[in-house]
Image (cartoon, rainbow, N blue to C red; front, side):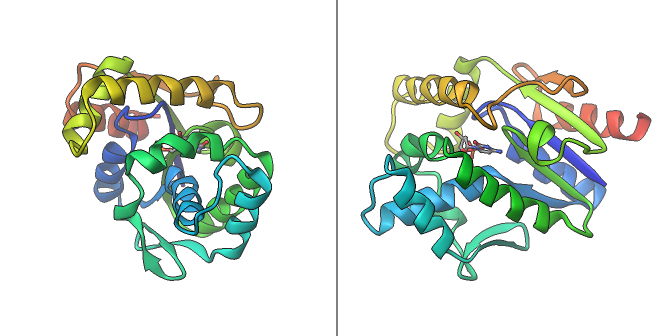
Length: 211
Ligand code: DC
């Protein structure tokens, strides 16, 4: 069984997907963490994130994978290093390269082989798992998403800076030539702007149980 969720940055996909994974006994796969791990590793070695060939080379050199639903490089959990303003700034641009996307898509599909999974990102319902059993698209205004981000990761940035970053990332994520953020025609759309985490979870679980 595959549950796929797409939506823009900060809409609550990871939080909700983790709860639903626990509730329904699914394996959680955060696809954005793969793009973040590549960006982080490339920055760590002083690389230029706008040099797609160099980023791809870095990606190919990494042993990237998920262990216990946590993203790992060479078996080491790097999850808590991936939500910095520096990674946020470049990750969407890094994810533009169709060659990198294909490499990551293979890893995502491999991770889902023989498991019941819930996966979230930008192109999970459309490209990675177009035949997913259940598809959802989460939405919320950019202002609500920026406010949530500040609450989740308050370190260093003002609300205005976070909002600006979200708007720039939204535009790039929606306009990239391959794997852009869009609504799959068979996805259930949930506007999370004024819903609690519990309310969104209930909507998703009810949709899964009644479909
Ligand atoms: O979900 P996130 O904010 O952690 O994702 C980080 C970036 O990775 C996002 O701005 C775009 C990219 N991404 C993508 O292109 N495709 C996905 N399936 C997931 C993320």
